[in-house]
Length: 202
Image (cartoon, rainbow, N blue to C red; front, side, top):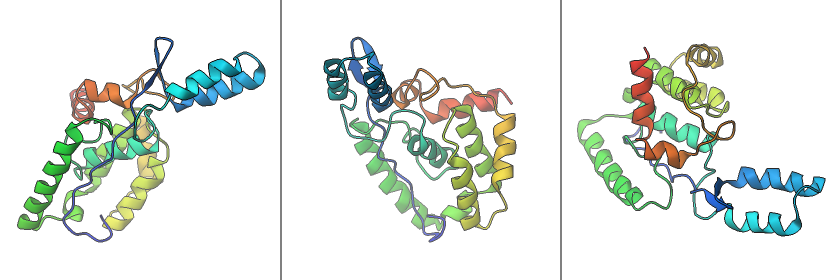
């Protein structure tokens, strides 16, 4: 988007829903752990097979705060995606409304002549880095954000990202290190709630 600099809106495909295994939400990460448990002899082949059957029940990217969800949150925080679109899970019907609204937004941007490089500023990049840090997002964002800045002609390197990461509190308890998933972020209001919490916290 930034390289071509034509009016555009980013629409993320959405994250996978969690599976349910014996009363708890599970993801592909639980399968990885279970493979290790099976190899160590602490989980049976039957239990592993049962978990594998239910862990990935829908389309979508990994449900934790890995690179895909982190960069989707970046796209929204930076202003290249519509509010609420980054956290909506892949199979939700509301994704259709976001697709329609994104198309309408592109037409409005065309009419106004507003391009990605008009939207992506250094402050927007700092905001995006803060959202990544606050949600315990992927460290790959520390590479992707400077690459985006480079395409936009903005001086914002990995040290700038690190400075934002250092001063931003972790306010979300998301997998892989925490308990919750992208679906849970959606259920509390998505990226706008994260942004508001950061603004309220100064």
